[in-house]
Length: 181
Image (tube, rainbow, N blue to C red; front, side, top):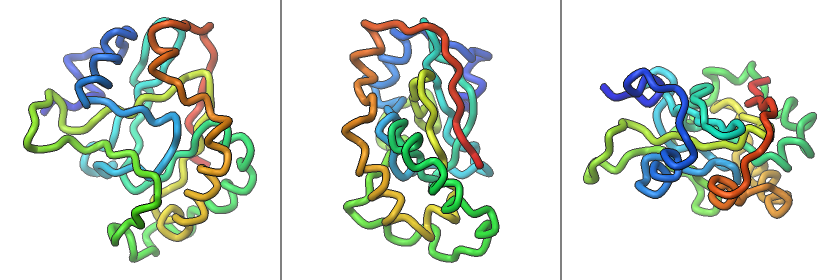
């Protein structure tokens, strides 16, 4: 199995390689946030490629059915998101996997079985200069409509020009976190 977290032992990629992943559909830009569609942790999850300085690094794994917020909404609604991201819902929400409303922003990390890909899931590409808040899948299904509204309410302020920045604007190394609170 070619799991992206152990892709021939490679954990760092140059900008050009990540651009090829994005162009070929082997990666998806996650900076705008949305509901993740893809594999669960038990199935291998969705690997996160985080941009740092002049390269991208595999930093973590996220799972389908979780909701990731864009950087601006993450910062603005952080305290409210901590409350909504209630770990006591774990395993208690039975609507996981039911129909997702069309208007909810989705980040599809699945590989189309009818196309060639060297991976079994897509990379989720994020910018290491920012923090992205992640809501667990149970809280996501309990509050999906609200989460999507909050994320979209500040989308315009989000640094969502990843592809432009990818090739032209290297940044200084700044630590980034993916919040699981």
